[in-house]
Image (cartoon, rainbow, N blue to C red; front, side, top):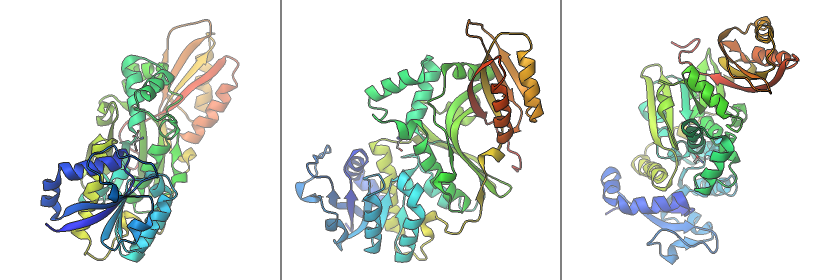
Length: 434
Ligand code: HSE
């Protein structure tokens, strides 16, 4: 049997998964790519003890030179995460003429163009299926199966931890901090949950997807980002009452040649396909101008699902490595589309206030909104407490900058105790969408 030798960096959860899947599915892998994939060397930290079985000691090294200087190794898999030394090691592997597979979304979102240029110049491939939505195939479909489409919109549940938390909050009527603590105790959420709950992880993934989908180098800093920490059980209750579900969505749209790029909690209609994506599952909804609507759904993390994506990249490289020209690995180098400033986006909004229960307050707020061209489509006011009454609006489409200005003024009305939350609403059809 012909063998391809691979160097692996990292033998943690995903690295261990790659080791196990290569053994578990050896026959299928050979059948589908014509080669046996052999892990020749594994880079681990000093003192590291493998959790997977069957790894002989002589495969382990603490020195990257043992991988990059080994001429028999044709493909390097990077699973150590973080920016450095992952970036340096990948560049060295590329310069040594090795193809690279990585699952590193933070690195690709911030240095993807640099890595792609290096690979392009060296004539090697840089593959990253596992970087977005774990085991769900989305990178290669965008590059290949959907390559004959103009992509108009992507909406994704790109982070499993936050989807798990929001699902629990919705089903069990508990607050954010209680669910987060429980998820941490069970090992579902990281001890430092910032990257997940503040939306950084989803924004990294959206940067990668939009770069690929829209054919322009999208910058991570151009993705507007809000996390889920401010979602209150009251918001979930009102969403339900109004026929919506709250999800942390990554949204990327091309409208009139400009890009909207944002990650934030979103009201979506309860009958939208993404509303049914629960627990730690991921899903990506894509609209192509030829194919129409598509949805990709599955496990966005975990050892075996992510390994499935990593190994698919290795197999793809094996099959195509002799093909030229190298097509920049899905990246583009010259900007062709501008990111729209957040103030210019047009959306519907859910706005929850706490106000004093005095006649005329509702009228005052509605009048102020009207002065900024914000018209209201639904109003709910119910319940009473000594603190005041919650007052909830859904607006018609309005510009974000008008909403923000109106809210500043509303906040200065004496009877308004606080602005509880503002959440954007996605109802389906877009302006300018064909
Ligand atoms: N922490 C991520 C999530 C998985 O919760 O989805 C890795 O990207």
